[in-house]
Length: 365
Length: 262
Image 1: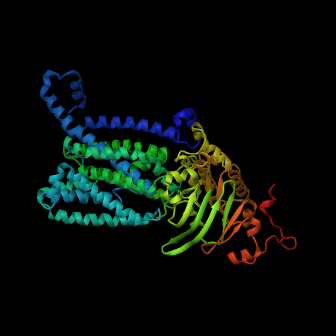
Image 2: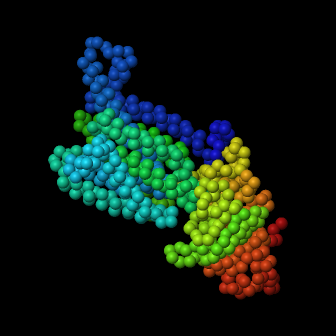
Image 3: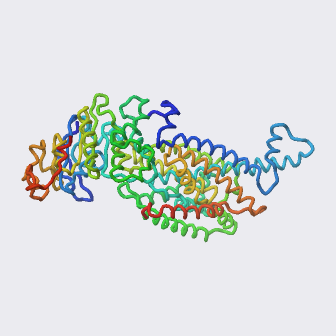
């Protein structure tokens, strides 16, 4: 199909029912919003380290009279805040885009990796590596090094998504009730198995696990970014290629096939991509919920459900919102910090209830 | 040209369609009629590559089972009985999905205008900005037809005829729009394409179909022109209903036939 740039922007803007012009403007604004969120995150935190000064020093040379302060600030900004911001953006984008893709795949606005057990499956994989990494799974951790954790989380997420899809989908139609209930069952199963592992964990592992399960971007390092960053970037880069297929899938699997979409391949690519992105996110930040359902839903209200715009917009808004949530988590009880999963749940859970209320009578449960 | 030889479909071990021979030629409307549950929709699904079948289906000379979805989509477009949407798309966005395969057959620059033109064809001028979910069932069906028309806008592409598969295209429409839609089908055929339509209204079938395939309990009960096929005996046998063809109602009972349309 020919892009509208050939037809001209004027025609696109006067076409009734065409929201692509609006979507482009929203995406532009979201880019600015993300820049603002990055700036806010760089400059806020328990320490009064000023990113402005650090960037100033970097540009114009260090002012000699407070070299010690500059060195400390530079350390905080480069080695603590910056990796955390990059990780937050990666995780936020991964979760939001995964939510949008799953919703397209299941043809349902309520599908969310956290809600239907995919994150739970990823957690199980990750916890298995954390607890058993030194014993039963030692060969795996030795062989894969820092990749063991994200890979285990990926496998856990993939297994859950595949089972879920098999259970909830019959002849191309996904039953919402079955999907949500199967998700609850799978999440409970994953949690029980995780519980067994936690039971086996020692004290040090236990403290790590508890904090990690609530979701946190704390402990972000350049090394972590190096291990999961490529996975998330790769998965996110693959998603836009699914956009057209996911749009057609909104008409049902059969009709998408009639339109020439290779539906099976689309489904499996989406499932693997989502599992990789969610798995990698869970591996580094634990269970951060509701980003995947809130972000795409808000954006659909603004720019409509066309995945060609929805997916990039979700990445931008997901990244921004997670940075903001992390800024809140870092400052609200400073010098301590709240797990970010608590912040996203407190904001996201009521929002989810609101969606259900609005959809009552529209979504057939 | 579509040729089906000895096509059978089993669903969950039960034979739904058994040994059906079928063909659809360019320039013609082939109507499939038969009572509920006679296997019409299942057969059309086999023909469109949606259901596994035994037997042979050739689409413009190529074996359907060896073709990729994207190749099949160039040769035929399918209108299902009803389509529900999971997200709030506008009418224009739905119709534009018909262009996803990229072979509408118009010049590249004209694709952008196609949704409006298709909507005008199905008498939905000015509906582009409305939300699909807010429309009535009949309007939704016409939006879907506009989408299907976008997919195969040119009835002939690269010298080969293209086909419209329509599963009960008019069953939720008022009489005016029944005629509009059937005229679109006839026009598509006259310009070199082919149409396969499942119909329930025998009067419309008699009026528009070039060839009728009558299905009964998963098998082909009769085939031929409307004049040859529509007989008292066949209707009684297939529809289990004693009706007589071409008999006017007694007395001054009013009746309205589509054939009387000006």
